[in-house]
Length: 152
Picture 1: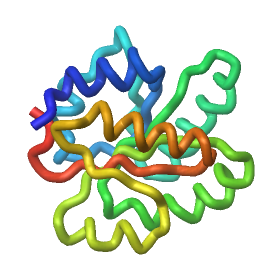
Picture 2 (picture 1 turned 45 degrees about the vertical axis):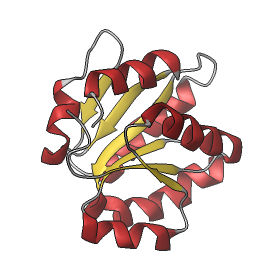
Picture 3 (picture 1 turned 90 degrees about the vertical axis):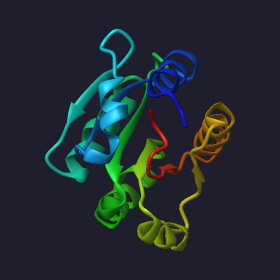
């Protein structure tokens, strides 16, 4: 298990991801409860495309500051997200980290999307570094897949 507070501390303080938007997902309850406005900002959105727009806008306006953004969502939103990401973010090369909850059944469909991903586990720092390095190098999305009961 990963301590949600340690996850946020590392992602926000060490990797400079400080802004997040997303569609609230009950499975991320522990992750939401560990959020701290001292190190990050989170805006809940009514749908995944709104969350993507907010996070992408932050990335564009903060390119000089080095603040990075991500979106938090359930895997059922992935297909709705991909078309808009491909139409805007890929065109303008705006990487946004995807932090996605996935149950066992949904996980089977992730690899078919051809979006690079890693599955979060106890070795979360290494996984975060790997997915972010790939995403920033290729300027394309990468998914941090979170399965059930990962965060405490």
